[in-house]
Length: 202
Image (cartoon, rainbow, N blue to C red; front, top):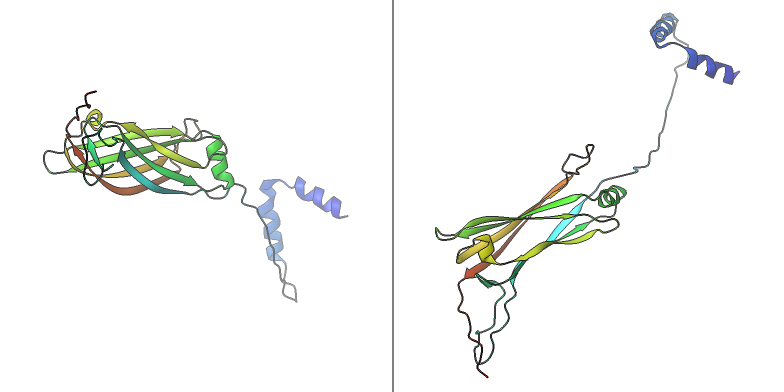
């Protein structure tokens, strides 16, 4: 009998549902009250996605000069010559939720903009954009590059550096959305036109 009722219910036209409801509204209420309760359990298949930014760094790579030259008290990585190679970058850590795994597998672009803001009229304001593409099952990234200050037209002076991050959008027509934003700041460096140390004579 239950199977027959189920089949009949499936055959009721949508236009007839209001007519059936009106019929039951006209009937007198039952003597005893009715009680009902339902529960539905759903598993969050994709869940949320999150990431953390840390380790923003701008450091020069110039080593100590050859003897007999000496830098006192030491060669600072934060006082950078205009033609010195410097690393500019940050670390980015994603959680490992199902949604994050999907985003990593899809090859999601991550755009980082490192902004150099100088103090004083003689300094510059420059943005350095860096982009990577995520990789399957990889959740930790270092995003950055090596570049010389003169390539960015950074004039000698004092600078603070911060970074903003955008995760996405995908190039796929169904993924033209930014999935995440973030920022981190700031570090301070000096760009200096340092002397070129002559090599010792042999």
